[in-house]
Every structure is written in structure tokens, then in C-alpha cells.
Length: 236
View 1 (cartoon, rainbow, N blue to C red):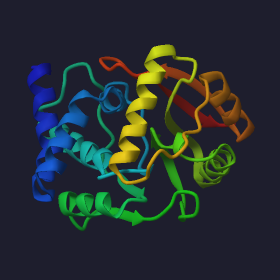
View 2 (view 1 turned 120 degrees about the vertical axis):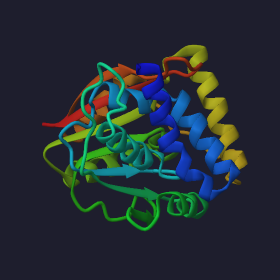
View 3 (view 1 turned 90 degrees about the vertical axis):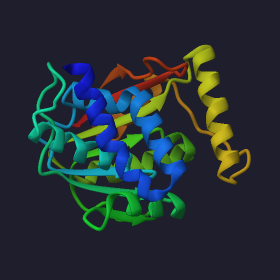
View 4 (view 1 turned 30 degrees about the horizontal axis):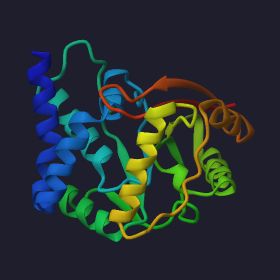
């Protein structure tokens, strides 16, 4: 049942992207099916009890579609065995810099979601119970990273949660592969060879402490060649 339930969840989360075109659909299906972060969020109940979720650098809105599909699969009784109940009645908001990604998200998810075209360095965060930032901060300068995290801390309601996935600069070959992929993505998006601002996990955790968070690391690159870690952070 679990394998079938997972397949149904993936199909439910990917299907809306057919309306956004072939690229959007196949990207959604591949990313949601192979990126361990999305599975971990549900399998480990990382967003359990959170009703207002802010997704910074949301891309084409995959997390929003994933959470919506999870709530529907739970209601229909097709939920992977052993997983905790998913977050339901969630208000998900995404902020994304790239207009094309926002357009795809809107075409896939419809008018019932809150999407903001903007820069996370300056866009309003309002308030949230949880903030999710997946593979985004290393595109910002070191001081910009700090400024964004301080703004996240100010936006979180108590008790808040930050899920921050980053690459581990101390990850050897896996980190170098991650960096090559990031540079390729920047080139594909027309940004050229923009610099990346990476840290080791100890440095990321130190930065989080300076910004008012306690954190614990969770390896988050299973099944991939990357050196990714999810930092589960709570305001102090």
C-alpha cells in the first residue's frame, strides 16, 4: 500500500502542472519524485501543526502543490503507511524572483494560492508559523544571508519553525558536484557565472545562532550526488 500511496501522492502533486506546459509538468514530477526534501517534510512530519507557511524562493510552487496533494490524499484514505498526518487547512504563500516560475505556479495552482513576485531581500514576509527555504540562500551575499534570516526571525510567530536546506561546503566531491549544478542552473537562467556564497554546516549553524535560532542538522541528499543538509531551526 505504501508504494502505491506514494505514487498516488506524486501523481496528485504533479498533475496540476500539465496546465503550465510540458517543461513545468516534467520538472515537477522529477523534482517531487527524486528530491528527498519533499518526502522528508511529510514522512517526518516537519510541518505538522503549522497553518501559515511561507516559502522563500518558491520556484514554480512545488511545495504548495505537494502540501495540497497531501491533504487530499489523506482525506481520500490513500496515505503512505507509517507517515504522520499531513498538515491540513494550510495557508501557503510563496515568494519568487523569476516571473516565469511565478507564471507556471499560477497556471498550475490556480487563483486560490498566494504568490508574490519579488526579491526575498526586500519583499514583505508578514507573519508565518513556518518558513521554508530550500537551496536559495547561497545565491545571496554573506551579509544578505544574515539580513534575510533576521527578517525570517522577526516574521515567525511563537513557536516558529525554519526549514533551511543548504549545501555543506565541507562536503568534498559531493559539494563540488552541487556547485557545478548550481552554476549550470544560473547559466540556463541567463545569470552568467554569478558567484555563490557557501558555508560549511558548522558555519551555517553559527549564523543561525547569531540570528536567534537553535538548529539541528538532518542529512538531506539521499539518492542524490549532492552534499545537502536540512537545518531544522527554532527561534530562541
